[in-house]
Image 1 (cartoon, rainbow, N blue to C red):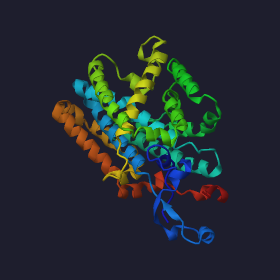
Image 2 (tube, rainbow, N blue to C red):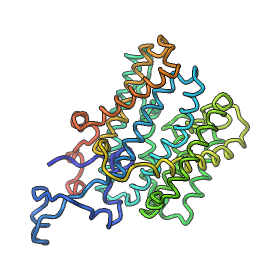
Image 3 (cartoon, rainbow, N blue to C red):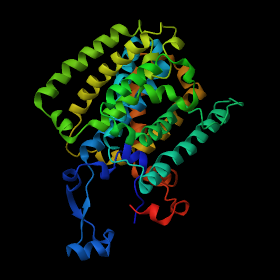
Length: 387
């Protein structure tokens, strides 16, 4: 029998936490799997229980979002030479991680610190974080030529910050669900973080706090909210909204820095007055929410050729960073100035999209299963391993 999906797959990068879905969504099934059903279940029903079917819509969301992440990372080294690339970069960075995090919160609604769920949190988030944080540190030291690059689990490198953030958000889920007005509280925390340079780099707490409202909002969402996005008027309204945002991004590209989009620094650290932090926190939250809704409205609901790749986006997320960093260490972007030109932008975008697509395929997922979907029953008490 195949191993259980990883915690990250249930949460954000590949959300598959079926226990967090409403009952009417869980029972949408097509194929039967008698071999995977226990004798007890068969005795109770008199027939094999139907296997659960993955939600094509959210698999499509995951795949398309991970493509945007990889392409935006590929744009970063060449965007300074192109206003268009910089504008596209700012546009995508406004919503691609908020979309990830919002869906992560949606699939975290049932997290209750019970032993089985704690076990999945450890095996699916903590273990990949330790493995890939160490791997990126060693890659920076030996491939990047940074001999004194430290290996520290307290200072996430590149894209591993999301793993530790997901862990912190997940373990605080019961707290947010117990509050009467969780979203305003989360927004206040984000605004306070934007004026608190003393938070420092440990565990990337600036990002954890500033992006927290999107996770909390996801906890508050219900299936009917996603159904609203299917309405024709919402999809039509998303088109001028996105076009307007692109035009604004093109205007702002030479005038606005990208620091606000990363949510990794306070206003003071970016040489702004302290009051700019809360103002930009609310402004960026509003912009990200609108563009996230537009993105989710246009994601196909039906199965597509790439739908199956949604199950492997954890691999695409964790591995594509080695390609981007490797190209940077090798000097590929510096030696090829044409990559900043329109043709170069197209080439970089296509290469990044194809590469991350290949990294999401089943063979890659099987190879990485030992670190992204580890069993680890040996490390937990027997009753903890029960699902």
